[in-house]
Amino acid sequence: MKQDIYIRIKAFDCSLLEKCIREFIDQLKQFNADLSGPIALPRKDSKFTVNRSPHVDKKSREQFEMRISKRLIIVHNPTSTMMKMLADLSFSAGVEVDLKVKEVNI
Image (cartoon, rainbow, N blue to C red; front, side, top):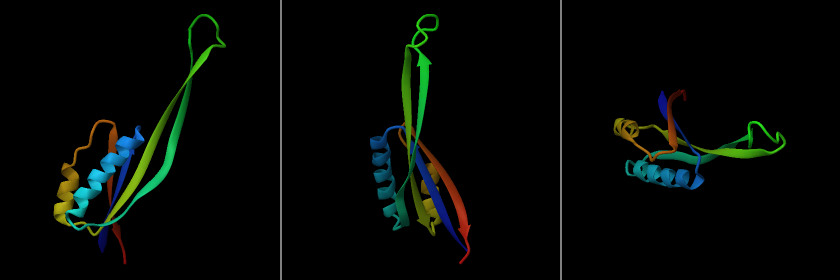
């Protein structure tokens, strides 16, 4: 059995996300990692509408939008040093990282 690590990276700012992914891939390439990605996942858009004033003029509203960009990186056959490096990684504020280890049957 071999393992794959699925790394899902999310951020509000797309340029910050791309910068973090470049740094992340550069660190993994130092270990000669077998990578797939970054794979662009669908962006999640959320819109919020609120009243401008709570008491007067109910037709006057303001809209806000939140966009979350996501990328997926798959590391095939990670070594123990790669696993330790992945556990110790820290990213800048506004970037969220999810790690999942899956065993693959061949």
